[in-house]
Image 1 (cartoon, one colour):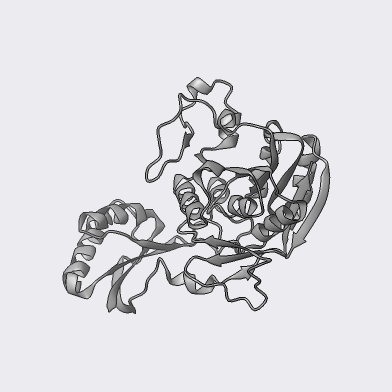
Image 2: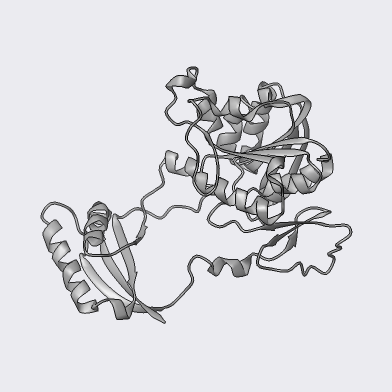
Amino acid sequence: MKWIKFTLDTHTDAVDLLSYMLDEIGVEGIEIEDHVPLSEAEKKQMYVDILPDPEENDGSAKVHFYMEPEHCNPEQIMLEVQHIFQEIKSYTNIGKGTVSLSETEDKDWINNWKTFFQPFRAAERVIVKPTWETCSLPDYSPEHDIVVDIDPGIAFGTGTHETTKLCIQALSKYGCEKKRILDIGCGSGILAIAALKLGAAFAVATDIDDVAVGVARENMHVNQIPDDRFHLFTGDLLKNAADDDPDSHTDHSYTYTAPTPAAGVNGTALSSQLGNDFDIVTANILADIIIPLSGVIRPHLADGGLYISSGIIDTRAEEVADALRENGFTILAKETLGEWVCFVCR
């Protein structure tokens, strides 16, 4: 089946208005192309620490939307879009203000990326594979290897990224047998699952996104991890830790119970919900989060416990190392893979 692709050439000033007015005529979703640089807040929300060089922002923008041929009249849609341009051009910059259409192949936009996620060896004894594939690696040994099945859904964390591999390798190297694990920023749950399969007694995992926490729970079940071996929480540890008055906190954490999250627990901060005496804490996030996080992790670690942090681009490694030392950590190892760094501390 083909899709009809509508493209509006316009200006960034008009994008929000167009989005609203297109929704009014039945357009359910749009795709925006522009050259507006990301804000610092937006960068911190992204799961990347290095971004492509920005193009010069000339104010131009393209708005795309797609419709099934049998469910629309293309000429009528184009006419309605032109009427929208005419209506808003008196009070906003519409740029070129043109609309064009083309045909595009039907694609499974949600699942198309799955062809690029294949089984791979993350550590000496740990293989990560997608749930929809069999373990076909030539060196796979059922007697020796641990297999972690992952379906990341729309959560971050297939394990193929260097930073996730570094964390799994650290968990494997330093050992998880009978230990209690805390993973901050769990994404798909891959690190907690790997730790449990490496023999950890119990795992607690958190993420600021309840969708990610739901995906992590599903992956726990796919890997046949019993419910009594893990707890999952949604919340922002940094935000909660900075709140001196838990009862005044409005962004309460909660325990995730599929399919919907439970209500907040009396405003109690996430920090007190997680508990302490963890043998290993992992955080595979970003340097900008790892740096302040190093100041609030200590209460959750048992005496002699390990703190494994990654997601750190090499150009930020010294900043992270300084923050770790300033907060009383001793760096036992600095591991690298490509441009990425992982610190193992005590």
